[in-house]
Each structure stands twice: as C-alpha cells, then as structure tokens.
Length: 298
Image (cartoon, rainbow, N blue to C red; front, side, top):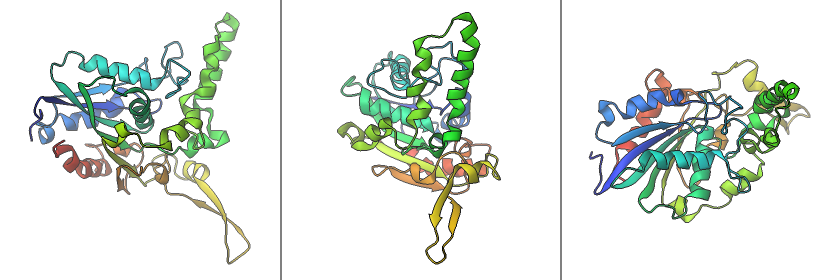
C-alpha cells in the first residue's frame, strides 16, 4: 500500500485517555511504525492534551479539571488537541489526511474537536478515519456513581486545601464543576449535544469503535460488581436481583458503539488491553481486527 495517496500525506495521530499520558499509546505507535504497516503512514504522532507528564499537575493550564469541550469556556481539551495537531502538521506542503487512534476519553475529546471545532477551518486537512478504543461514547458508570465521582474532584479538593493557607485558590479551581469527569456522566449536557445529531463533517469520516468485555483488569471481586451493578425485578419470583452488566472494567460495553460507525468487539480485552497491541494476546487481537481497515485505501 502506498502511504501517500495522490497529493495527500497520510498521518496517524495517537490520543490517550483520562488522566493518561503519551506512554500509554506507545505499543500502538510501535505497531504503526513497524514493518507490518511500513507503507501506510508518512508519520505517526503521539500527542497529549494535558500540559503535564501525568495530567495531574494543577499548576498547568490543561489538567484534570479542564472540560472536554464547553462553548462558554475558551480553554478546553478539544481546543488544545486541535491546536497541537495543527502545530504538528503546519509545515506539510501536501494536503494532510489524518487517521486518529483514540483511547477511552480521548475519543470524546476527538469527537468534540471534529464536531464543534473543525468546520471548514482548513481545507488542506482531512479527517479520514477515527478509531475509538473503549471510548464511553454514551457515558460511563464510573462518573455516574456518586461514590465514584471523586477522582478529579478529590484531587482538586486536595489541591485547594493545600493552597488555602497560601491564599493561592482562584476561581479557576472551581472549574471542576464543568470538568471532563463530570462531562462523562451519561446524562451530561455535553454528551447530549455530542450525540444529538451526526453532522455532515462526521458523516464524511470512517468511524470504528472497539470494545472489550473482560472486566477482570481492575479489582474484579470488588470494583466490577460494585460499579457496574444493575437492579431488576424477577418477574417469576418477587425478589430484587442484582446483576452485573457487560463491561471492560472501566466502560460499559453498551456505551462504546456508535450508529454511524463500524463497531467491533474483542471479548477477551480489558480497558487497557485495547492498547497492548504487542504485549497482550487480546491486544494483538485488537490489532489484527483493525489491520484490514488500516491497510485499506482511503
């Protein structure tokens, strides 16, 4: 396969997930630059929409309390990601055709960027294919459960507590109320707008989702039953039953597929296995499943 199609440079962009870092995407980067895919891409670019190495430094402009996208707030992860992409490809002489590989919340950042920010902004840039790996397109129960919201709220609260004696708290610290974690609640206004209607721009792109069904990756005996439980009444007997919905240990299986996408499933994969294209057998299955779509012509 020819990596340059006509006058178009084909480039892969890698995007990590919530509280992640570029290193999480290393195995995918290694695969896409290996001999198996040697003629596919002109370049593979691994980006982070956080400003710090781990996404946990609250002194940085882009961290865990930055929203995925908010039309009323200039600073968002989607805006930052688009700026990073433009900075990475600005010296290209040819038209650029982008394939994006996004994990978990990185898929929401990517979708929001395309839906809300890229309308005719640059005619020399084309989004060709988007691969969403374990993306909670319809929200996640991790954000919905009241007792399990605190990941970024707790960290922000701790940061505020530490800064109070020095008078270092600013109004920006309360931006947590519109943070990325809150936006992943299934009933959030952000997800409602994101999923409301497929735009013409989105329809011009080939979308792929991949979900795992193996929830054993994170404290199986406690984490999975508690966070992914569902209550229902047994119609044959008057008892309340508790069951566990299919999930990959972090995201509900039903939250990943999109109506306008090619939706794929690797039952043996956990949430993080979706990234392990070399080191895990289930991750290799993800790679093999996507390979025909990656190698196909745009």
